[in-house]
Amino acid sequence: MSVPEAMFETITTDYLETMPAADRDALPFGVVGLAPDTVVEVYNAAEARMAGLDQASVIGVPFFDAVAQCMNNFMVAQRFEDEAEIDDIIPYVLTLRMRPTKVRLRLLKTAGTARRYVLIER
Image 1 (cartoon, one colour):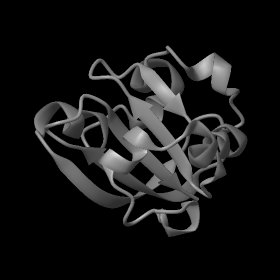
Image 2 (image 1 turned 90 degrees about the vertical axis):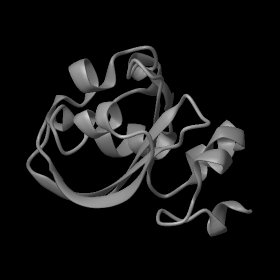
Image 3 (image 1 turned 30 degrees about the horizontal axis):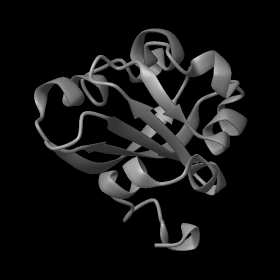
């Protein structure tokens, strides 16, 4: 799959796991990969640019506690705790560090992969 084919609605967790960092950085939407304890392991260039946060300052930081507290709720964070597998797109409004911004979030979690993903389309 080439980067243009890796669309927000169809990209898979398996592909995100094997995708070179440069290809993830070229995607037109935000990609945040989280360890099971929600520490940020992947933060692509698009998300860094759109959120105004440097990749180096976000990697290794608890996502829902320190980076995206506005997602620390039943609609996003709790689903990663409660559900064994997720592939869902939800409308959402980001409110932290910015004026309210309507986005679409895609939550991805598969039983065979430790890392979970939040994709953000602005």
